[in-house]
Length: 431
Image 1 (cartoon, helix red, strand yellow):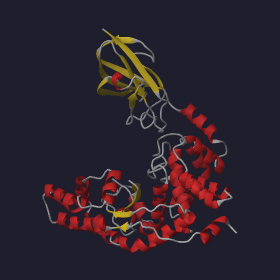
Image 2 (image 1 turned 90 degrees about the vertical axis):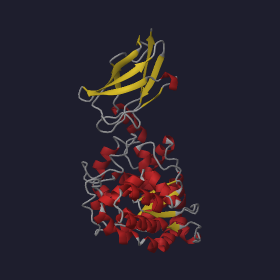
Image 3 (image 1 turned 45 degrees about the vertical axis):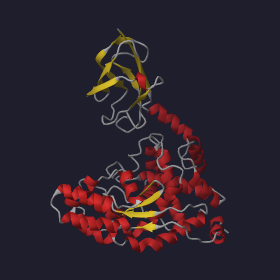
Image 4 (image 1 turned 30 degrees about the vertical axis):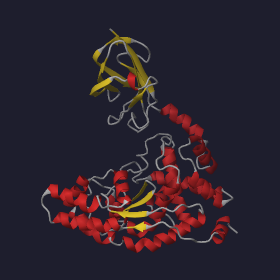
């Protein structure tokens, strides 16, 4: 008998103490109706704060923090997307219909992962930036996205949120239980944000694949079917970036890429986890290992992926390739990396990179000498030399040693999103 089937038989079903809460949905529409009757923008702002935000549940606070929503943005969305809100309203009020379905699905998840911890689920009305996420140990459903369907009118939001129209055409309301289990698994994981594309990919893949196993239902997300049809080409592109901290070519992106399909990192993670599960003799242990994996421990992550055997070569081979491919700082125009010195005052220096860079990203960190060794930044002069050179203006003091790391992770990266190798920029001043 299959070990998983045996596990399903011997583990009793038990309900949790978690709650499924939708109070904020009704509270939002109450505030919405009052705002429509008020023309004064300041009073509209007072209404959304008083009637919705200040009375909100912990779930509302958590989703606002997770997606950086503000009272002002709520008012803007209400005033500028009337057709959207009117068309999605009825669906968001169906949130209470899903409580029993969610409970049954969570019980199924507990069957394959008996260590499952109870977590409250909150239905919220956000501002179109998530259908589901987690924050502060809470499971958060963005009802205006997750409960939408093909009837929702999107022409007012298409320019700002181009992904939503094709997504709504898939009738996401029909798959909200699957979404809930996916996000519920995230609440059980040790991390919610991966340090690299690979760690974020596995994190999402675990949630997606184990949702299938728990619910005995295929993933509704189109990336999975598309991914298997284009697997070799996707692999070839993915391995170039998987050790990068830039996830946005693969996760939380749109379909304006060479594949014409968004979020293909979900497919890669799903495919790796599927391989891992299928190769595991003890299925129950495999589930536990996947959920409890330390995704941001690179050694543990590499062992997990290598054990899955999804890629042709060991991951350390691809990591070495990635390190060779990273852009670098060649020099600065004032000094080379060393102890050269120059006079104090306001000076300009240029950072010269090995290849054209993403001009919207930059990051500096303290060097070994800490905060006291940082110069006073004045302004950015701009990019030149085909985006290979960045010139900055800074103010420096006499008789002082300065240090700063020019950082790639979440900072300087090339046009393809590959971060630079970190570079210690240091110099001394004289009288």
